[in-house]
Length: 302
Length: 325
Image 1: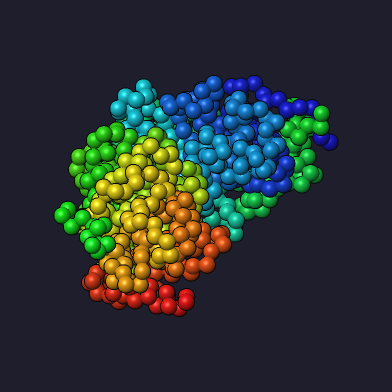
Image 2: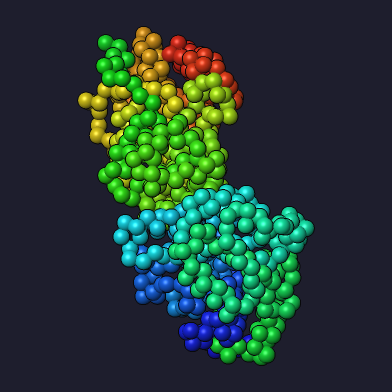
């Protein structure tokens, strides 16, 4: 049964809280349903990572979206963008009603991050493997700006990668280069949900021993539960605090579940790029809230 | 007076456009703090080393990892820098997806500099030759594509680029190129070719670009007995000089000729063919370029083999002229 009242986000400041994250999960699926296409699995697996970043660990100002001193997020695994769009709306960057225009002709909410249509997409991604290079260059450029006193704080750059994505050789080029240039303002986060399209990552192209590889690339590897929002928040805070002193760039391996949060979507491949039907959407919302969504619906009838 | 004497300044020493680039980059670096440079272990060949020596903190050697280099350049541009990312043209444009997505689609202010254009590089052979780079770069929306004929062209373009928002590809030579006389030419401007002769009625219109400008001028002199030659330095590959091209069409030429050290498909020849086909006109277009893959040989031997000597060029043009009659 669908709720037909207009959507309203829960109060700001609850992003790490379950309520905020449920609202994010709901709107991810509503976007994809509205567009009849998109990537639920890899968007749902990212929710706590984004919560950990944006809940107190990301300097920005909604009133000055393009402020030169803001922190940056490069979503290298671009197909997870519905999660980012939901979070940005939650933070107040645009009204939730815009989300129903995801993937529609003329919308700034393109199917994959498009910087030319939406400036907060720090890189236009979607062709996997390229974002880490961009994030590295961005971090280095911002460092130069800070050293030249053009900005008064050193902006932090987050780069979120997928585990299928790190099969791309370019990612390892950028990690190798990170080991050379060692920027103080960069952190990589791997959404290690263990699934890709043609099968589980371990079957299509195994990555193990992954942590050893990352350490061999001179990175400071942190492994964590990718769905522990509070834990991630604390970890990112710690990494930011230590960054200037640390001699290695941090790489967070967040152990996640593809499709996390909706029981029938938790699968390594089935929900990579499939849009839910009306029944499946209702079923998912029912499961999230044990009934109707207390926040209304993006595709409100009124 | 021969066209060669009219057009080429033999009093000034020739210079490889990659060297012109390296020198001007260092100069721009001194003037503009935002200029940064990247290379992929070819700094001594692309001449970014001249910038690197002066501004080591603003120079990023990515090692033999061009895809990452291109991405890094896009990231530096996102931070407000003006990055010049250099490598051999073939290695740079070979990473087409990175240029397609991280640079062109993003609209990044990256200046991609591809050196070692064409079979003219000589002995290293095919693998090091940029022969399809113009085809690739031209196909991208937002991309500006330029191939300087000499030192002046290179520097003028680079200085112009400082005021341009959007991605750029510049194609440079390994070998020294003579300097053109500039006194009577129009000022440098985007999409404006150098008209190096008068625009004659019923002429052979030659559009040459880059390294083959010199041999094409000498070929034009060999063709003098066949009638007037209208000679254009077609340095702007994208956007092309449509205004001058239309004027050339309206002069009712006998033949159009494009000449480039690049595959015949998709480079300058392709660009001209595409535009001419939009207009009702009767003159055929002869596209001269590289047929088949490149190979090792001295630059002179390669030019002989691929038909790029003045005599060979003149011969091809003459043949095309009689075929058209």
